[in-house]
Length: 283
Image (cartoon, rainbow, N blue to C red; front, side, top):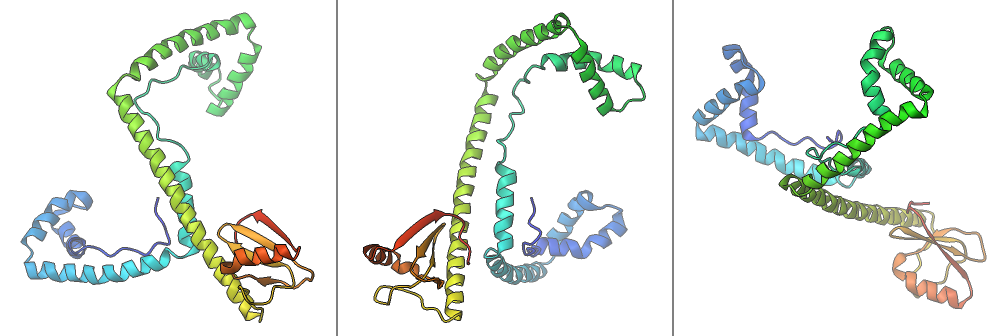
């Protein structure tokens, strides 16, 4: 899965060289892409060392600039959104065991498999979707005795599957799949933990933005030693929002470093402090 907003990495010295002779090689040999790889390698090997060093130096200089751009990009909303999308796609389902025995068809699908060709011949004008609908209609018209024939076939296949599955679970292929699945689960756990780190960073940035916005309106940030606030105050702390309900309707932000002391002082005064679990965003 490629991030369309990620800064483009510079080409290595070798690929800079390949890019410079690609058209020439195609004209001389008629070869393109991977077919010309051998020729590219041979010509790179014959290239004087000083020319190789010059190409590598260009790459090194551009890579330093690329790393700086990448670090800046990792602080953006676009990067955070892509990481969440990547996580969802990669870890939505566990990897499939390609060597596992296939589960048996249901009674209906056994019926469908047996009747498919005859239905195609009987209704040649129908599409696959229409044939599927027609098969369902025919299945509904079967008597219980007729359906029982296919149910019995399903039961027999199911018992055979149990035996085959039990044998498969004793194989090296199954052990390899279990290791693969465990690795996937571990990667998922790490990615989820990393995602929480990004969320906390986002929360901190939102908190800072909120405080800056408060300062821009001329409202004071509060800490121990300053007067207590006189109105509803939104307190930003990680992924929690603490709402202070005071006697007046003035809004302001609280400096989170004084959160504990502030709550203790306000509780002594009998003021109401409520806590709700929510996403942290500047209000």
